[in-house]
Image (cartoon, rainbow, N blue to C red; front, side, top):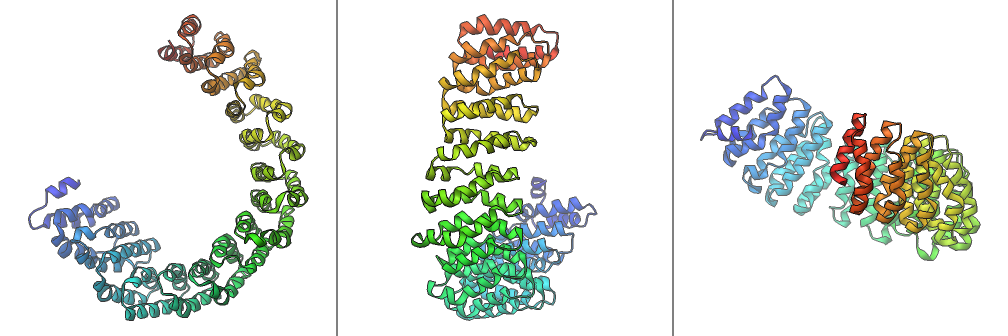
Length: 588
């Protein structure tokens, strides 16, 4: 269609415009949408002069369609600068985008604002003051809140490149928007203040923007107060250390104690950004502790998920003392919190405190918490503890944990919910390497083998994958003694599902087993199932031989694999015949 349009263009460029007009008047929504999406093709056919003089005015005068079409138009215009002749002519794109920035639909306005920022970045500096600032002023003074919300997104794109007088005018316009009577406008301004702070000179941040930020933090609307948290983090990152406390700390404390739990949640979520902006402020430790003790579970959960990171960012000379005196008491309360989500979040983090507290404090204070969480009624809490053992064991050693760890593992492994059992299976290679081969052989080997006969298919397959990882971790010599013989013995099991699992196990480990073990131990067990009464077993034998055949020497293939596949190729079951033929092509 693009080629046809380009080829059908006349010298005066009227044909593409005519076609576009017809398509935009079409009753079919999809036709109109596709027409807008090929605007760049029409512009190429017209050339830059016709695009500026005919296409852009036409689009400016005909912005009346459905929201999805307007959204596509707003997105297209953002990339039109080369199509209108380059940056010196890009100002012609401002009128249609300005119109789109006043549309009622939020997504259209947002996309129009984004495209305006792109076009503005292309414009020469003189045109910013002659074209763009009047545009921002018109939007900022619009009767409808829609235009005023769009204006908020343009200030940071223009401000760094204009004169001092123009900058002062922009700051004044932004201040008016920040104090707008309409909550939607204040919300839009609060959402853009963090970016605007990065563009404004330090002296005006302190004199003009910090008061606006403080106003947002005490706004009547909690949606506005919530957005002030991002602004606080941005302001803290640019202010000198000596002025952060006097200008911002009181505001941070206020939002951390806000009556709306959503605002407190946002503070907890952004606490690391605030910490990095403010540096090692002792007051932030007490603020964080208050979030860990919040009355709302959602706030406590997100705060608990930051415990390790927050502690790591504390000053080394006072870190241990701050954790022990201020944070650890809160952590101890969270371990017995009634909310599953709070405890699950904490379980992923609390182990990470071990390297910061040292062996003695870990044994005295963290080990009891660890043991408590291992006995928690919620499996996710126990799993999160086990999956984050690394830093814990590096401090106190795995042997001190092993006796306490084993009961929790056994309980998880036998949980009625199969997804819980699957989760502990997936963690088993990590646990096994941490606990060591001797402990695994004595305590966990039987458990791992039992998963091969679980009544849930997903568990049996996960067990095969886990056993492969264990073989890779502990070596083939260990596998020949402890794992492989027990798994191959399932070939004689009366339950056909267990016999089938043995074949799946072979498929999984054949890559790591090596030719010698395959030929000596595995091949006889696989071939013994070729005469199985269940067709599903027999065609899986074919699949298995297809995988292991290429790893065997030619003599074994000719003497064992080929006769077996010939036998299966003559099987009465059509599926068995098919898979036997497939295996012959690869293996023989």
